[in-house]
Amino acid sequence: PGWELRRVVIADGPRAAEAVPAVLGWLSAQGHAHSALCGMEFRQFTAGQMTRAEFAAFNDAYVAQLRAAGLLVDGKVPLTRTNVVMKHSGTGDALHAFTYVAPSSAPQPVPNFVLSAIPEVRFRTEQGRLHEEVVEAGGDTPQAVRAKLDFIAQACGARLRQLGLDWRQVSQMQLYCEADLPRSLQWELLCGIEPAGRRGLQCFHALPPIGPAAMEMDARHVASEHHLERL
Image (cartoon, one colour):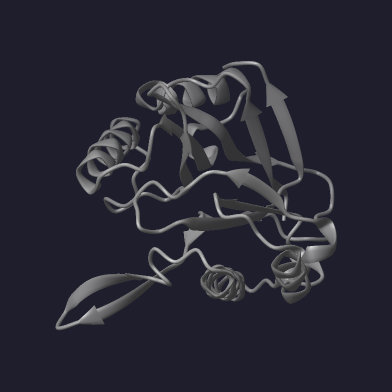
C-alpha cells in the first residue's frame, strides 16, 4: 500500500554500458531514490544470438554497474530483466525500457508487479549441478512451437502463483520469438491464459540472447507507462 510501479519506454535508449548510470541519473532528477529501480529491458542488435561467452561478458558488465551503484542485495541482482536479440545488419545494444517504484496516494485494486522474461528452458539439478534443457530445441514444427508455448505459459503462471497472483492481474504480456504462430496456436495461447488473454499479447520479432532457446515471455501490471525520446 502506498506504492506503485511505473514503466518508462525510451525511443533512443542509452547503450547497455551506460544504461544503469543514465537511469539512476534520471531517477535522481525526478526525486526518486536509486533503490526505486526494479526492472530493466535490453535489446541487442546483431546478426544472430550471442555465444555464452559474449552473454557472460555482457552480464558481468551489467552486474558491475549495479555493484558500483550499491544496488546488489547480498551480492545478488534484485531487479527483473528482459534481454532479447533483434536481428540487425549492424551491431550494438540499447536500453529499451525500465520500471521503478514510486509513492502513490491512489488505491491499487490490482497489485503492481513485473516479471523477468521466461524462456522455454527447464532447469533441473543432477548430482548437485544445475542443467538447462531447451524444450523442443531446434524444433520449428507446429507441434514443437505448441510445446514451447505451453511450457512458457505454464512457467509464467507458476511464477505468478509464487507472487500470490494469477492471470487476472496481468495487464501486459510480451512474447519474443521469430516463429510464425498459426492462428490456431495464437487462439490456444490466449484462451489458456484467460482472462489476461482478452487484453491481447504484444509480439516482438526477437530471440532469447542465447540459443538454442527461441522464445521468451514476460508479463506485468504497472500503474502507468511513460514514453521518452531519450534519457
